[in-house]
Length: 56
Image (cartoon, rainbow, N blue to C red):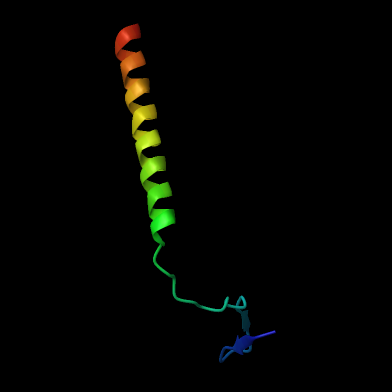
């Protein structure tokens, strides 16, 4: 376990840090999926606003 010791004898424990990696950009198929999900979310929000306006 990794720890540091302060001047007055107190110990500080630190969590084990995960290994870092660089993210890769999405490929064209993933980009299309993101666009479709964004359009579906926009349609859902628009539909909820339309229902709210119709009810009030």
